[in-house]
Length: 379
Image (cartoon, rainbow, N blue to C red; front, side, top):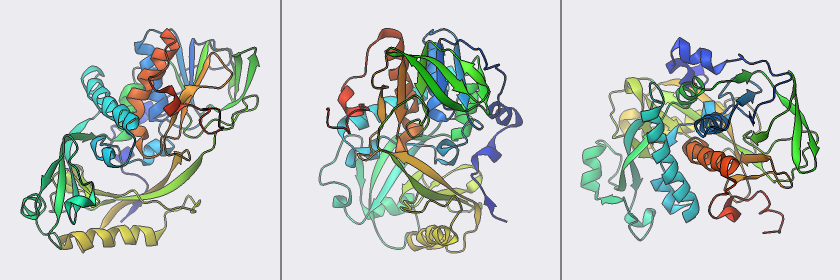
C-alpha cells in the first residue's frame, strides 16, 4: 500500500511528533524581545540562533504545525558542493558555511539533529556533462570506477564524486531544535502589523496582539500582512517525491539524478519541477515517470514498489536567490524568503546572519546579493 504523504513524520518518535505541535505559550499580550513568524526549518533555526545569541525572550509562532509547509516535504539533502556548477559564488559560500553549522548543531543540540554524513555521486555521460574544469572537492571517476560503486547501470557512465555531504530528516531536525526553544505557539497566524515611525510596535495574530522588540519573518514566500507593504516578486514551484519499498539495491549515498539511499533499504527519489501545476494533489503520471526513470538508469529497479509519494511547493524569487534582509523602511524587522531548493541546507547560516544582525547591527557580507530591494531597480 502506498502512503500519500512524506515519510519523515513516520520516522519520528512520539516525543518528536509532539514537539511539532507545541502550543505552550500564551500569545495575547506577549512582549517578546524577538518574535519569529514562521515555523519551518528557517524559522526554527532563527529562533534557536536568537536564543543562543542571548537576545532575550524569543517567541516563535506558526500558522499550522512546525514543518507543515515546504520543510516537511523537502528531501533534507545538504549538498553544497554540487551547486558550484549552477550557483554564483556567494551562494555556494553560504551553503558551505551552512553545512558546517549543521555539523555544529549535530554536536551541540541534545540528541543531535539527525545528521547523516554521506557522499554525492553525479552520473554523467562524460566529464563535460558537469563542467570542463574540476572544481575543488570533486573527483572524476571513469566508467569502471562508477560501475564498482553502482553495479548494474543500464550503460557505462563517468561520474563526479564528492565526499562529506549530508542529509537530515527535516522534521526530526526541527523537532530537536524546537525542543530547546523557550516559547512556541503553533496554530497561531500573524494577520497584521502596526508601525510607528520606522518600527513595528504591534503584531496582530489569531490568538491576540503581540508587542515585540524585533520581528523576523520566515514564511517561505514574503509575508502578506495588513500594514506591511512589501513588493518582492515571488512564486512557487511544485515538486513530487517518492520513497520506494525496501530494496536489495545499495547506493553509495546520493546518486544524482537517480536516488538517495535512506533507512531500511529504501530509496528517496524525485524532486521534479512541475511548472504551472498549482494543484496540491499528487499526480500519478509524475510518480510513474520517476519510477520509470529509476528503471531506465538501473534496470534492477524495474519492479520497485512505491511506499510513500508526495508533493510540495518550493518558494522562489525570479533570480533563484533568497532574500535575507531588513524589511525595507523598518529598523526592527527582518525577513528571509525564497530559498527554493536550499532552504533546509541554508537555514543555520541564514539564522546566524540574522541573529548577528539583530544583536550587533551588522548586515551580511555582500548584502546586495540577498537584498529585498534588488528587484526594484534601486540596487
